[in-house]
Length: 98
Image (tube, rainbow, N blue to C red; front, side, top):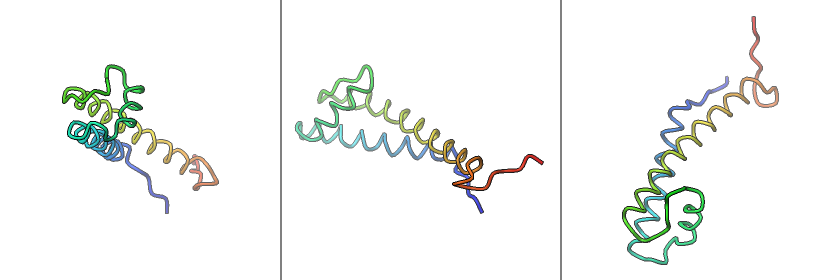
């Protein structure tokens, strides 16, 4: 029996997980400026408008981007999984049209 993934649920989980990870590192960087600096520099190279500076405003901007990015990634992952499950004979049974 094949089990489909819910794109909505995986989008929510991915957004919350990635957003929480970026928020945690950003807040820790406010307290300990050396902590996670390389990670935050990488994040700032991906998200436009975010600067890896130890400021609360920057942490919230990065967290917002991360929530949206994680949600989109989760939804795409669920969609690809379901596509492979139902249309690739290697991964699952192909549905009959009739």
